[in-house]
Amino acid sequence: MSLVEGFSFDLTVIWAFLIAAAVLIYVILDGFDLGLGMLFAAERKRGDRDVMMNSVAPVWDGNETWLVLGGGGLMAAFPLAYALILPALYMPIIVMLLALIFRGVAFEFRWRAERGAARAAWDAAFIGGSGLAALCQGIALGALLQGIHIDKAARTYAGGWWDWLTPFSVTVGIGVMVGYMLLGATWLVMKTTGALQERMRTRAWPLGVATLAFIGVVSLWTPFLQEGYYARWFAGWHIALAGGVALAVLAIAALMFRSLTIHRHEYWPFVLALALFALCFVGLGVSMFPYIVPTEVTIWEAAAPELSQKFMLIGASVLLPIILAYTAYAYWVFRGKVDPDTGYH
Image 1: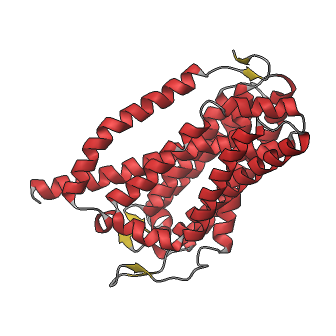
Image 2 (image 1 turned 180 degrees about the vertical axis):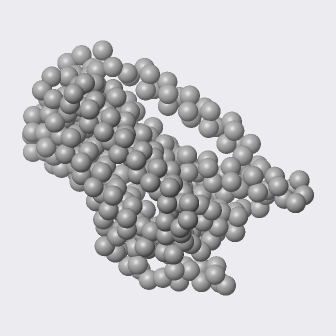
Image 3 (image 1 turned 60 degrees about the vertical axis):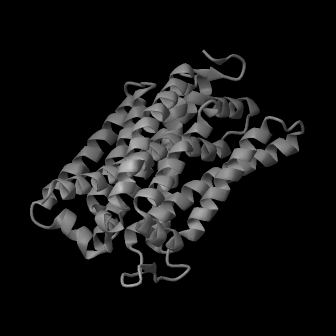
């Protein structure tokens, strides 16, 4: 293999990991944000809802940066994958984007609503937009995992309009909603005090159990979707990898539950819930890699020309540190607890 061929190989893998990292950061950052929006439905007092919104008000819109980066990076670095995946997932992606837009409008207009009925309507829009966006993200993930019908000769999507809607994709969608609510509950344990914090601590326990149940169901279902998945997890020595991942998930979950109830930590439940999501994302990567359209198109088959990847990597090497820096700075500035009277303290 020549130096150019070796560099091309590494460059494609680098871009695959960059896009995967952007998606993971988006899931982590916007996950608790969307989960908080769904938990909004369980809180009736205006003061408590104000506290919940204030906990994410300074950072919520910045979280969407990573969604744009992931989608834009996919289009630029892997144009064939973008051309195949988008037609297959038009409906859930469009609905997700509309839900995020409507949710953002509700977030801003809620504070300006003077009448109770108007505020209640915007609250309902915030709840509905959060839940619908989370559901559509999970459905899109499930539809991608179960496989997309393509015409490899024509390099086009060959499936139907409703192929994305299956029992598996809906199950993944509901699982993502529950997982996001777990992130939202543990975020509020970290950011609030008093009765609201205790309610969120109490709700985090059943949400954690439900999240584990969905992780188990999806993990056992996925290997039977396509032959390649089964070989990744249950053929030969790979079964040891599957067992190790399962034990790691259970260990992190046990630590999270202990930190919630026995030690009553404030920060660790959220950190451990994030670790649970990160571990599931690693498992997803193990199932899919090196395919970007399972199990039809690899990252190298879908990659943009080498010169394009080099040019974009130069830009990414400049922009990514800046994005990471201002994101970290925003979270650092608005660290600590929040209440409706004093804001952050």
